[in-house]
Image (cartoon, rainbow, N blue to C red; front, side, top):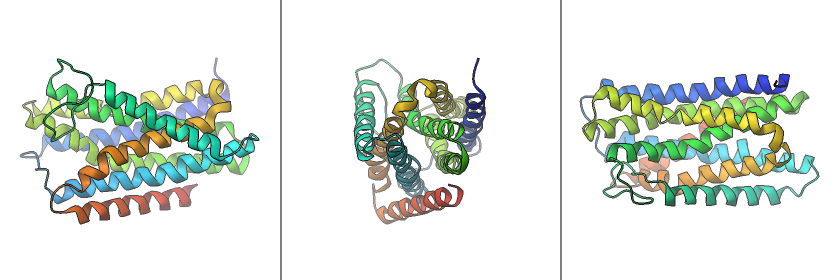
Length: 273
């Protein structure tokens, strides 16, 4: 039914996205042992948000936009057109979801999106679930490219895919805690808050595998899709992560978190890719 390359890409995507989901689950488990939800001014909160932003910025550049330009040129296209076009489409897609899907950011008083009767806990989970979609797509796209490319180029894409999965997994641990702890504060039991936090990350393997399954039909548009994922991730960074990392009195630690995340993701990408 599926070609050998597709089966291999599915296995890699399941492994890579399964790791990112596992890290979300481990982070969510913090609620089972924490006596209370840390307040928004906690230094670690700013550091983790900044770290996640740095990882996503570096991943967007080296793991997504750079391969998008390279593959477009290999297909005889003008490299910057799909890179810029796909990037803007990714931003537009996240803006549309942010505008339409009811969701609530941790610490916010009012939900965003269309009016909804959803509970605050559901809105909190939907906010993080929304932002996990482009992460899963990114990992799946790179594994699909790795399986469909022969020789050294395929090995380079495989290294980038694993580097991206590791980087996203690292930033998913604090993200999982950032979901489960506020849910517990809202009145949800520890076990239910843990389960909800874990399930917020399930969209990553789902969308990673879906992208691989569709890769055969969208191969000519792969540069656009890579840039699309980059645009969606940068939107999350600019719209949410960096602003929240710089709230309060300790904005400098948020900045250092960005630099640390960017550096680690850059090293992973260069070393493995």
